[in-house]
Image 1 (cartoon, rainbow, N blue to C red):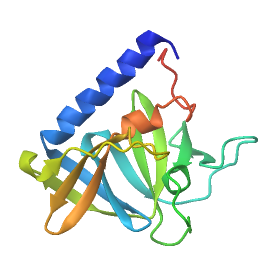
Image 2 (image 1 turned 60 degrees about the vertical axis):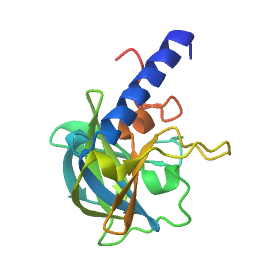
Image 3 (image 1 turned 90 degrees about the vertical axis):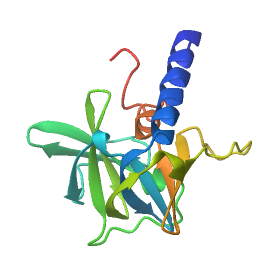
Image 4 (image 1 turned 45 degrees about the vertical axis):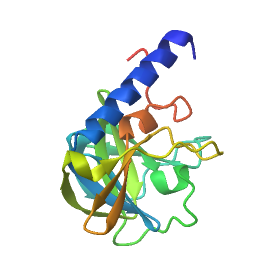
Length: 170
């Protein structure tokens, strides 16, 4: 990655942090014991999980592809990508279909909770942690009615170089 794309990624992520801090509507979902929130505007639809067509040599977190009304959509299991201990496929398992920088991508999660309006004052910055844990895609922590939500910059996560889904040229 060169310096220009590095700066672009940092600028995009700072914009996402600012947008999260300003509040808004978030789709909430569960990954293991944690509850996450993503900007509702990135969500295209929510579908039940159906086993995708595997792609040879794809990383473990890329489950394969599905044909969604004529569009071939890569399916990423966020539970595997984010290191959850288990990734069971049951009747609650859903795919959140997202539009990320013009591309359609599916994200497998344990379950979808609801859509929450988070006022600006309820969102705190994510703590800086200098560990092996990648917190760069976390834009803030939302607190609502005793629920703690980890707000995620789904665009930064899905377009990261290691995902290999979205190139900087597009």
